[in-house]
Length: 307
Ligand SMILES: [Zn+2]
Image (cartoon, rainbow, N blue to C red; front, side, top):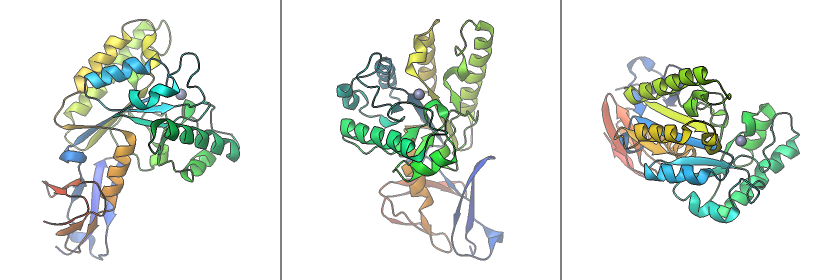
């Protein structure tokens, strides 16, 4: 085993390349990342705005042992229709709390100082409320531009979710422009009185979920939305529970948050390989799982592993 360039293909659109110092790429050994616990699939459920309907949604997620990432606007908390500051820590225990800006303006086109204030003010207050470090974000209205991305990267934000659905299961190359797989129910119920379209969108949503559950390559499903959307006409809360039931308690799926997956993927990217790739050092505090030529291995945190 002479060579050391290793290509990891997640899906056709996404790849992460682990490299070391070799000149001969002809005999590369295929090394693939697996998700935590050696699983081949991961689900991230990501909800915005922090309205009082989050209470019902979190209860439902807890009932099905699902994890969520909740993007909150700290200046909206304690106002009509929004959660109280006092309940944030206990309500979201076991889930992730993340930035959604202090006041929910579209960030694209704002001056640098306004972007800084919106993000830092929110991050600081959410850290005070949760007692934890807040390192993630969802763009309000999905609005961002180059200045926004550049600015937040200097503010301790390690990922930022957009609203541009990919309709696939790829892992984003740039965590600061994290496109989700699909909006809850594929945007069904988004337009009022559009029953025919709602039906089509629901079918395409469940088709994508079914493709995910059947996938035999590494796949991440990231569904995003808002708990308040479930309060409209029809049986949307029932639909949400149907979806949770469908994806929960699956032995092939790792249920996680955005920030945990960011930490995990970074730990994977930082694995150090010997030239012949039989020795692997994991410098992180996270156990990393890999597949080498179709055999799965756990590389324990902080250890040197010999294959
Ligand atoms: Zn929002």
